[in-house]
Length: 120
Length: 110
Image (cartoon, rainbow over all chains, first blue to last red; front, top):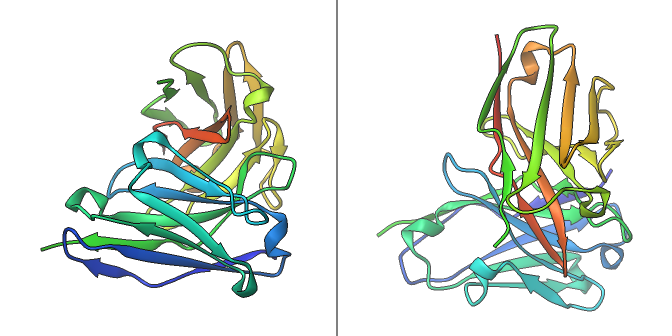
């Protein structure tokens, strides 16, 4: 069973940065792309971007370009999302989501989510 | 920018059938968008129900089914149960390595 375990909740001040991790196990990490999805309190899901874990290529939703950086460490089977210049509006739960398969461009397996709170 | 549309809310009686849809502000949804559906209850991560239009994820009851209806993707729940009361989201692959979620549908079973 695919497992994605995310890092714990964070509280940050406006203007700071935060890096959330997503450790994958029980599958070959480099064989599947990883996505990041945001959910603000009481709001819907927003696709932020993804990384081709094998090549390191990334693509971001227009809204998050310049705001978000997605990386991975293949030796640690871990993906990361870093958010810079945090604002109160970045308070949200952030999910990593493994792509269903190499050939099927759908989001499949979800991490448990990481709450990032931006508060002065 | 293309918006993915979902009904904000829907209501179904226990045992009834409900169809939620996922459309585009401009154009038609086809299988080429690989529509997928997710169920989310408060405080939990989403659960994948349907992917690539029709395929049920492992462990998902067969009363959940996906399809294309007219120009939209659809999620049909047959024989709704109380624990189907959840938020439902669709996501479409727009091509060019871009995905877009719909705004979600809050389903009430009463």
